[in-house]
Length: 396
Image 1: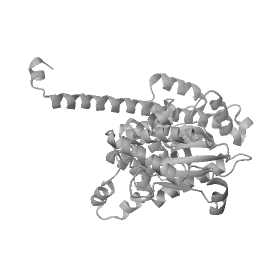
Image 2: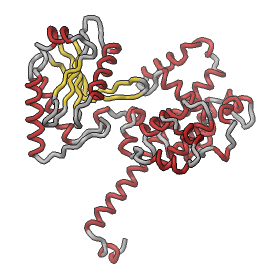
Image 3: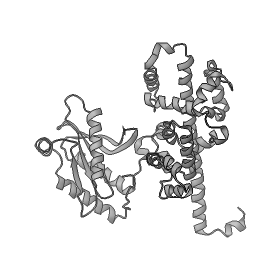
Image 4: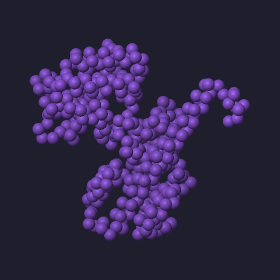
């Protein structure tokens, strides 16, 4: 930019230019990380698939192969290598064999070396076997592999590979890329049978407009919070949680408040990730209560308290009961907080515990509802007076 150009640049133009270049490089960085993760997972699937077919020791492991691989990789510090993840990588490889063409040269050489026993040559029996599930679609009706991996996150791909029909997969690949859907939006469209409705519709363009109106759009912020991405980068949940400064401040104070009560609260986790039905959820705060001998889960809702929020907390409690309770533990309880005036601010969720048991065993030890309400309202007022923005989190 010459002197004449700079002299014409207003202050607002300067801010706009800086923001523009920031967005461009942010998107490039996110795209590069996602492509690397996606290609890595494809290669893992390829290696396991080839070992299943040609490995010298394949008979030794049999049905326990994925469990053994998972155990060995975890010992080496790898993340996202549970048996379920590994099977997903294999399915990805089998659904999209053409991704081999876009591997970086050094990676492709290693891939061909590792998979040399497969005799991966065009027209070979093995290549036909792997491509069989896509052979009903001619190449001109497939998304080019480079376009696929640069436009969709691996979590998007995980949703799509579960679809058996090649034509149906292509439909959602195309619509997702065209509409820049978030993963949640892709799930919603699949669940709403958009493909089937499109086939029956006489005005497909109008249906497309309707389907994309109000659709959640993928953004770099959403991508970087993807559980595959932040495990791949070695991040913690806390590093990437979607939390306004208001919400973060409340949670910080709440953690201190409960620990300072001296009633047996022991801090265990913040933004604790749990996997339920193939979807990740994050519990804001998790404590273990040494007197009650149970977990206490805390969730903060920036919007009005609803039955859905209570139901979500009970879902967390059921998960903890099934996966975290050990011998001698009592069932977990939850606290849902809503820092809004004129509404229920504090609600104890019991996850199926009878009211009699809760009152007799838990209520006398846990913080009083009125005490929690006073704390939340006081901290809310302090933050508002300090000018901290109160923002409703749409993901709540």
